[in-house]
Amino acid sequence: MGVSKLVLPEMTELWQQTLEWSPNSQQQRQFQHLYQLTLDGNRQLNLTRITAPEEFWEKHLWDSLQGVALLQANTPQRIIDVGTGGGFPGIPIAIAQPHWTVTLLDSTRKKINFLQTLVLSLGVENVALLCDRAEQVGQNPEHREVYDTALVRAVGPAPVCAEYALPLVKVGGLAVLYRGQWSASDTEALQSAIKPLGGKIDSTEIFLTPISQSVRHCLYLRKIAPTPKQFPRPVGVPAQNILGATAVHRQSR
Ligand code: SAM
Image (cartoon, rainbow, N blue to C red; front, side):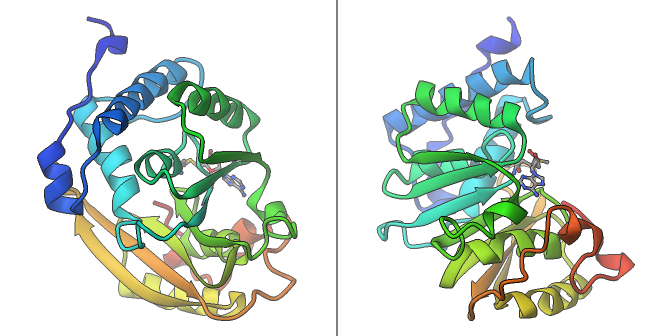
C-alpha cells in the first residue's frame, strides 16, 4: 500500500473527552481529505515531517484545535494564522469552526499556492489567503488591529512571534502563541517584549497531547493598548534584534 492510501483515525471519543467537541461526518471527511492532500503536497513541498496517521491527527489536527479551545465557539471570530506553512493551525480551525473567518498568512508563494488549491478542493469557504511578510502586513491598515485573534505556531522565538501577531489584533483581542517547552525565564522575556507592543500575558496553559503525552504550552496574550506605529519593525528586524532578548530565550518551537 502506498503512502497515498493511509487513513486517518476518526478519534470521535478522544475529541469529545479532550475538547468536548467532535467532528461531524462532513468534518471527518474534510480532515481525511486534508491529510491526503498534505501527503500529496509533501512530494513537491517541504510541508511537514509528521505524516503517520495517528501522529498527524495528534500533532496537526488536535494540537491546532486545542490552542483555540478557550475561545467562544459561537461568537464569530476573525482569525489570522501567521506563518501558516502547510495550513496549521489555521486549516483545521477553519474546518472545525465554519462561522469563523481564517486568514492564512505566509511569506512563501509556493505554500500559499498549495493552500489555495487545498481550500478549493476541501470546499472550505471561510478562508482567505495572504502571501506577504508579517512585518509588512502588520503595517497595512487593511490588516492592522482588525483581527480578534492571531495564531502563531513554529515560526520562531516567542518575542518575535508576538511582534508579528500583536499589531494585527484589535485592542481587547488575543494573540495565541503555540509553544513546546516553556519556562519561567521565557515568561519573563516575553513579558518585557510585549509591554511596548501593547500586550500582556493573560494566561499560560500547559497540556499533554492525548496519544504521545508530549508537553505543549499555549501563551494567551491580551492586547490591552494600541501597538505603537514603530511595531512591527521592518522586515527581518524582529528576528535579528529580538525585543527583550537574552541568549536563553532564543528557543524556537
Ligand atoms: N505554522 C505552521 C506549522 O506549525 O506547521 C508552519 C510552520 S513553518 C516551520 C514556518 C512558516 O512561517 C514558514 O512557512 C515560513 O514561510 C513562515 N514565515 C516565517 N517568517 C515569516 C514572516 N516574517 N512572515 C510570514 N511568514 C513567515
